[in-house]
Image (cartoon, rainbow, N blue to C red):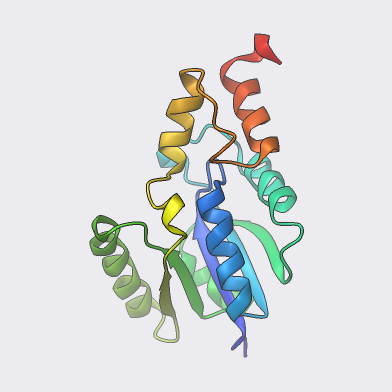
Length: 164
């Protein structure tokens, strides 16, 4: 029954080095890690789900046991389909905890087998978010310290197509 399987859900719009750090850490604990890319239309994503999946697959190709899939709807339904009842969530700061704690409790209420494990990224990534990376890229800043090179290139293509 999926004991060694975990899900790392998120919008990953785009994937950052902080996300990749959490994926790597999760792969050290679990045999299989499903990176579950949420459609997140309400967040008005910059990248389509297929683009986000491709970026994660490329960036995580050397991390063993990682599978990238998209999902729409409730995470608990994805967990049931994949028979993976551990959710990995990254915590950057105490300010993330309250929302994540509420989500963990709701998910467990909807699916009692579902447990949430919180992982913290390396200290150098604690300030990092996709939102901040997009803002820096939009303003023409260098985002290569924060995202894989291929992701930085795609951000430039989106925001500054004449520079490509």
